[in-house]
Image 1 (cartoon, rainbow, N blue to C red):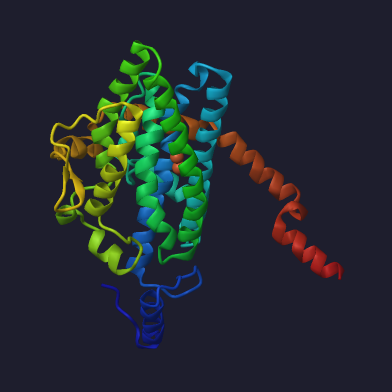
Image 2 (image 1 turned 180 degrees about the horizontal axis):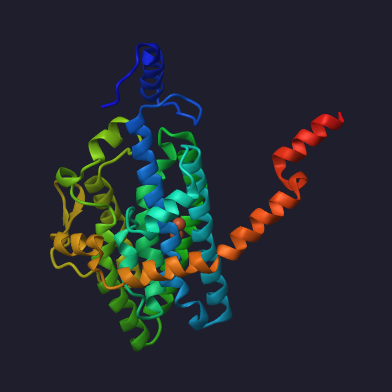
Length: 327
Ligand SMILES: [Fe+2]
Ligand SMILES: [Fe+2]
């Protein structure tokens, strides 16, 4: 618990009233330390997932089967880099710099989504990631557009628009493969068999084991529980899989008239915990690649800083000051 000094009590009441009225908390507003820390943790994990998520798909850019597919995939992977940038910027408004967050990622002190520790074995995996992984991301993220912290909520609006494009391109890719040759259909089915369960794990542990959920919901950072969102995702995917002509690898999947939802089989949480602990198929490869990219990019950061120091007039604030002085 945060200790509130007496002079701050008015600010705390204002914070509580803002949350209760469903209005936004902005960077300069007073906020409880735990609210700030919780947002930094969530936004950082989200930002890390966006940039690590570039790797499994970028693996296929040079092998895309046509110019059209290559252009789509390159645009998608670039979008993910952009999502990372919006989110690191949102974390900066809370007083946490990008260098610090990247350092925590590189040293394993902050996590990214477990899903990106699985390999992309065939071209169909690009479709499965778009349909399922980006689809799960949208289900998670649409409610975040109404998150109580303004900069995070606004970043999510743009991200969600781009995620829907990602989901559609994956769906269309799978549809093409599914309706193609027997071998192409089998490749699409194999990708779904491998990505289905890990994408259900993307919603996080079941509600009764989720460490941060209750507080995040009280603060209106999160709007729905992990299990609610997971169910919503399953309900969306079942009819889409049918249209795709592909089978979801769950023998327990059946319509529950009473609940008005699809029932599904048990999730292997041991696998989830192992992947989170660092024992997934690609954990070392992903983080190793990220660290190398960061090292190899050091000269770009140095050059940008040197350029900014040499040409202060080009930085927006200095420019504004000079214009101001000239008036
Ligand atoms: Fe993204
Ligand atoms: Fe995406």
